[in-house]
Length: 428
Ligand code: AMP
Image (cartoon, rainbow, N blue to C red; front, top):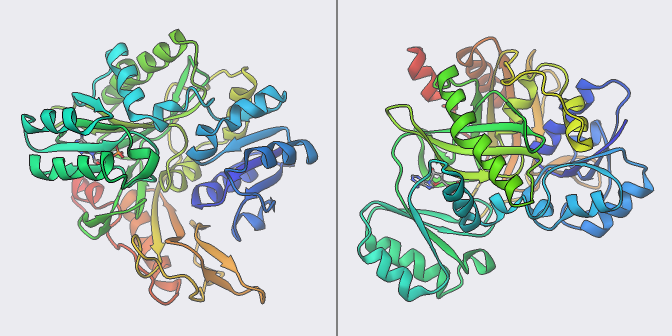
């Protein structure tokens, strides 16, 4: 089979790795890929959002299956375009991807489907938004409705902060088009959990849930980032909780999307808040594999992911299990550039030892080779280092050891990925 992976980050390297591992004889392409995918795939120098060029490449290289990594090409209708051209694609249509590309739309779907989520209202005009905020209980959350690369949610301790966030988005255009509509919602207490599920629009296979670490600093402190690490499995995830997520969140959302004539096919990623009483609420939906969750979850899937993605894309899927059991534990640690997330510095040379030990996978994200072939820092999140072991504690220790040995000037990382799990297991 000839498979194209769209995107060029750690998630896409992990997708290439999983697809190469899973199906012998697979020929892989990546648009644009990165130096990591180059070892598994033919990189085609096409940006992930260049929809016309990607469709042309699928024809030119006779690609059987296109797997779309990031949200932007999905929101731009890449899956629709490929389907219209008679090509098989894993990823939702533009209309279905609105579950991520419009938070206001996602809230409307959840309200119609009775899915638990924070009470909210959407606004496009500042005055009614400020009036609403003026009587809203504290704390509260102001979110840009559109795609804002993880920068769109502002958790506000006070109404004044919320008013300032609303003003910045609606009046000052701080997040551009993404912030032309905002959602003001109640603050949810609890612990976050990322549940990724494969779906053909009707049936669901829940992948091993993960937790990610969005804050830059150890102990989950400092500014929000695209993600500094993730791990799976998560002991918080009891069979009862997953049943509830399936019954109360995934199935009703998929049913509502079918009812609207826009069935959702692909990975549905539910970012959940689990309250202390165990009740899940949806914080957000994403329409693709999470990054860095993908780098932790894909390596611990049992064989068969390539066949699953292919069958879903062709509309001929039979889930092998309602819940996919992990083959072990994975801890993924992101090594970021100096200055990440606000002003990452590019250029430093990366020293990446060949032999980092058994069970260590290094996924490239913001790397590039210079004209001499030297590996250098190109972007904020540079590498995602995944350690595989029988337990989260063992994987966390192995991952730390490997991350110590990878060197580049300004290397910025957290040594405490998985700390919640270790605390739960009493091994912190
Ligand atoms: P989002 O862009 O919606 O995923 O939000 C980014 C982050 O903001 C989430 O991962 C949460 O940590 C936090 N957040 C968003 N909405 C809420 C909420 N209603 N209550 C508490 N925290 C939230």
